[in-house]
Amino acid sequence: MPELPEVETVRKTLNSLIVGKHIDRVTVHLPRIIQRPDDIDAFAMELVGHTIQGVERRGKFLRILLDGLVLVSHLRMEGRYGLYSEDEPLEKHTHVVFHFSDGTELRYKDVRQFGTMHLFRSGEDLTNKPLMKLGLEPLDESFTLEAFRKVIGKRTTKIKVALLNQEYVVGIGNIYVDESLFKAGIHPEQPCNTLTDKQLELLHQSIIDTLLEAVQAGGSTIKSYVNGQGEIGMFQHQFKIYGRQNQPCEHCGTLIHKTVVGGRGTHTCPSCQVLV
Image 1 (tube, rainbow, N blue to C red):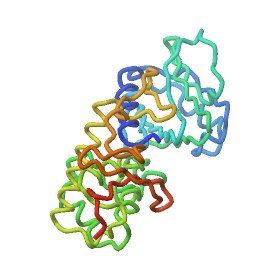
Image 2 (image 1 turned 45 degrees about the vertical axis):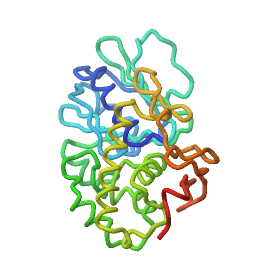
Image 3 (image 1 turned 180 degrees about the vertical axis):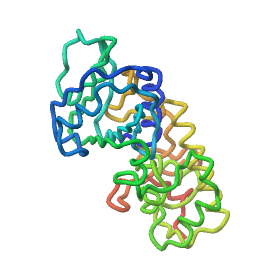
Image 4 (image 1 turned 135 degrees about the horizontal axis):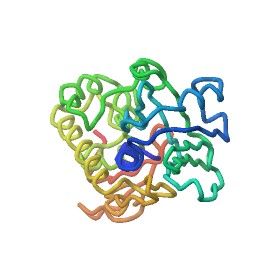
């Protein structure tokens, strides 16, 4: 957490809150959040005087576009952004503050302190770490069935493990992999190269449908996720399989099992998702 739907929701929220704002100064309270450049003072000074043009997303990363710069931000498990008045008290775990010329501040909070920020010149971010090796975007028009088949179809690894690999398909974490596999009727331990053309087609569409439904619901709030306006996601109320161990499957009534696949807790219906 957060996964693609949550990051997409944050992106949309930030686009409505910070586009056009001019950065007067930047305060960094936790230097390790800043991964590029190495010099924290250089990071802060380089942003001064720039105006935010828009916010985009690549996988689970936010791309904050400025005039001539791109700030790549990964929220990891607990990171969150919020827009505040400069008069509001600084809350605990606020690690980076972008001070705007209109008296507002974009504040980055992170209880777990796992989030990262990388600053690039425009055009350099997509060809350098951490974005350079990311795979297919599942909500982009480039995510065709043929592209998905080419990336996934011949691999011998378990399908869940493959879908969690961000070098193949980006943005799908544990929640949405479980939900997508259940929707497609595919067992998470099924080797990729044993999936039929029909199964690949079903899974491809299930990934798209699941993510679109989650984005529409504002993502999922399991523990602490909120968007840039402090609102929780609602997709957790639509879960068909994730987190429903020992509850009856909505399709067949069989009790949902929870196991471990690829080191991740995994939810499966033994009747609807049969390992071939």
